[in-house]
Image (tube, helix red, strand yellow):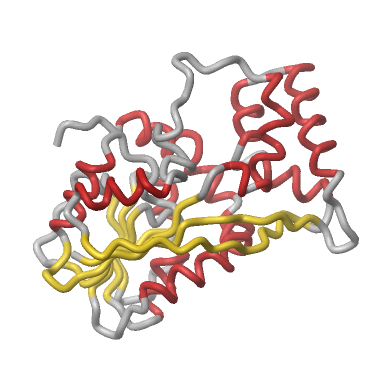
Length: 275
């Protein structure tokens, strides 16, 4: 394999991983409506072998195991997988492995490849998906969800726009298909990537669900420190400019506060394909 995912490995171990562990319960709750749709599309049966790609803290791996599958979760992040193992120490039909999905090799083929937001970070996605395709048996299938464009995901676009003026420009400027949450926002690019990797009968369905961010501005902003644009502000800025950026994000969210808190739309591609 030619690609180098070392930057992603460092990010998910040193920065994002510990933050996601700290916010695991809230993140799982927020993503639950979308996770349920992805799991329903995968429709795993008892006894099937399932590879959960970029499994993080293990929420979807646990759900796959509860459905009767032999579930294997792989992720680059050691902190997240250690947390996943603690959550499942008494579960027999589940296994976690700290590995790069690009390089992952199994002695036994899988019936299903699954992912909840774990496939958008490959340096070379065609190469990565081609390797994953090899892990499927001849009748195997693929099911995953990935984010559509930021404008369809205001839960992330709103704070992103608010803090943009405070952050230094990225050099080189990011491209739409660069590794990151929105790498597969373009449906044509996504379909082409999977087709080049060997997948057949590729289907995309647009799914939207409400993302519950919190009951108050304080709760929303506490969570924002862990993921998304505000997390970058906390990581990269200091002093007064950091305070101004956080305040700008808070003000932007305040416009969407209701008596029940803040819920904003999240839109994804629900992707399915066959080996």
